[in-house]
Length: 85
Figure 1 (tube, rainbow, N blue to C red):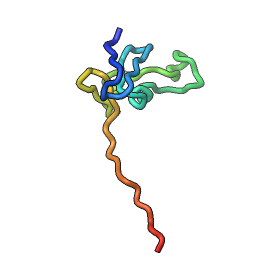
Figure 2: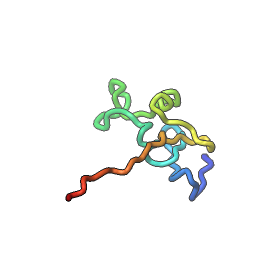
Figure 3: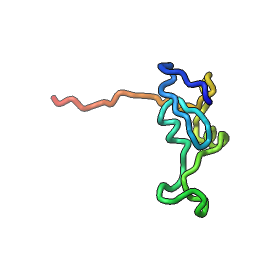
């Protein structure tokens, strides 16, 4: 059983029932699942499966101070729009 806490600054905790890893938010959780939705796992190895910790790290996911996986921080910029004269 994981040590999930409600209302933390790390966002919604998502625990994967397949691999047991815990993620800070849905984006990181969704990013660790790969493969073709249309095939069952085991058919030519093309079905949905979880990435290994090494694979998640190579894709930019990292562990937070609570040991959960989190997506890399994105730099947000304001969109610039042309002002009509």
